[in-house]
Image (cartoon, rainbow, N blue to C red):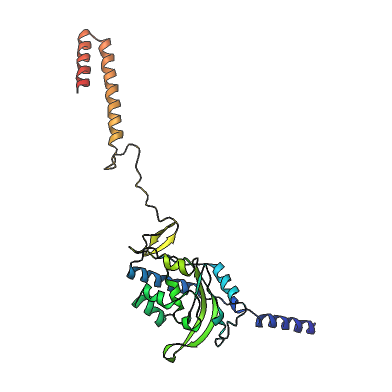
Length: 271
């Protein structure tokens, strides 16, 4: 029995030791909040009318796992990332979720937003270390609607020999290089949202909130909401009933009553 228990302990320990790095989740909320706020700020400052809100996509998460399945993503000194290849229907970038604020990203997205600078910084092909520090720019192109990230540790020296760290590898889609760059539209933020609607400067999928018309009773007046029409109809019915009574009494009474009743009827119709 003791030997069998030891055997199970060894098996469980072995399973724990080989847990793949992709099974470690990234901070999904932080990433969505960070880059949607960046996109909102970018759209407002540059008057971008078709900037979409990013939604989390598990298919892109799985895509990232497949792209890096042979890489050592837990060793920050590994240079496997150099061999990555950008997709035709998505683009990737690296970020750091351990730091709540990123000076370099804040500088580009908030302080000095520019599509010209973005287009100059990134090219179609992945250049490895040359693009590592500006790869976050991929998150700014308006037509991208989805994002998915996995854990990926990198520590490398950037400008001025400053060590920079990354802990997440993210993909945005559904567009590749050319299509994402060609789909920028300008105007009031959130006003050019095909198959969606504007919400606080960003485009969101689906119809916008519907405004219900005020409830009206049958016969309500269109302007004041009073029941004038219904009341008028009731008054007309009452008048018709009174006329019938008059004529009935006139027939039963004398000829004078008949004449008097006829005069009243004429007066009623003239009026």
